Image (cartoon, rainbow, N blue to C red; front, side):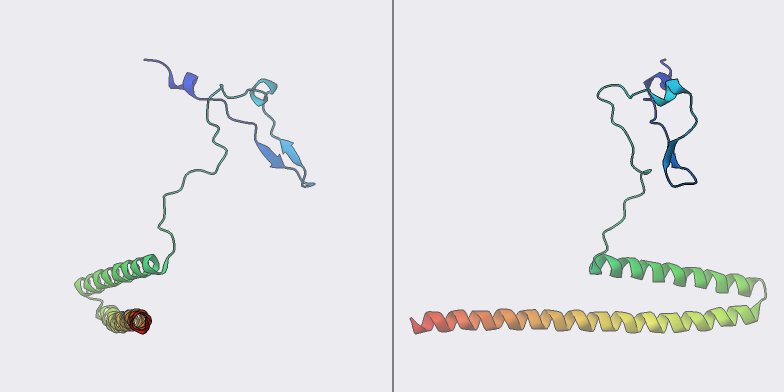
Length: 142
């Protein structure tokens, strides 16, 4: 089995600003600073890869917000149950009150979202209908 160290390309020298703001190479041996990666090797000078995230579109934001709210509600329910098991009834009552408030708020948000989508769909249909009437009027006039 071949050693994995031999297949790794040399890393570029690290450039760090000094106290005056000017760039200065780090103190590495001269042989390491001048090494170049082998021909055809891809140099990875970008930041470390981060997990892919969904683009922030209104639909995706709604999905992400909804899942975050549901996750929080679940955690709050677990906390309430744990408080009840541990006989911390005042804390459990506070958690239950907060759960009721959050559920009410979430229900209202969903209803408003549904109503908003309904109005948008209705306006789109009315617009399409008006265009169809215009096309029909033009065709009738001919």
